[in-house]
Image (cartoon, rainbow, N blue to C red; front, side):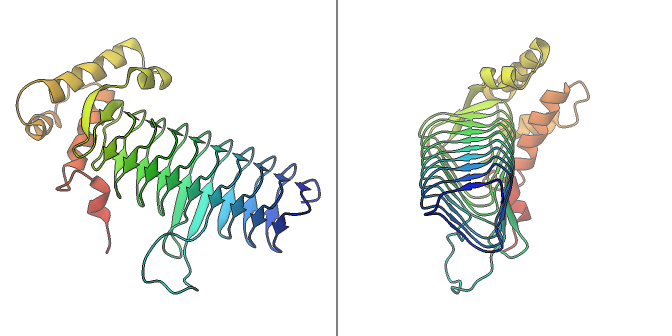
Length: 271
């Protein structure tokens, strides 16, 4: 903390761990037990509550609220919730809210190099991997899993327990209520439908031209050829001729089908 730049109007409670080069701006609050890594910047009016562990080189913009208790009914005021762990080099814009795990011993996890735009909400017990972009006012309910490279356009909403496969994309105003396979583009609102492949996502992921073609081929077979999707997928699960990236997509869809609403994580749910 000796090398940190803390504005005189900021409140940093005893027991907070502040790394070298940290900037804490006007009217910020950092709770006891919070950890903020080197060279992270909190602009103005940022709240970082207890049980938050934040890595280095993050930038948090005004009015972001990081780590306040999850939005759950029927808990006493002294209820002990879990942790929020955030990686490195994230950009967290104005009015973003991120909640910790809902039970003591549980956690919400946000990786590194993510861009959370204005008004984004990440609910309790989510896993947000790396290199993800969530555009303005996207709302991610509790227990969701966003895999690496996911990109949301504006005001995308995600139902609890959904998994969004790596490098998938959702268009603006999409309401996602089931798992979305890797490298796919989804749009629509109840129902949300896989429309095409995410060509930009495949390029960003570093897929070769051959791999990109194999993703397009499996998309056409699953979503464009006639017949029930799940029947086709179940027939292909054991197909040894599938390319690795094709098998990843087929197995993802197959796992999602284990739950009646297409949310694999629901099968792990403990009420």
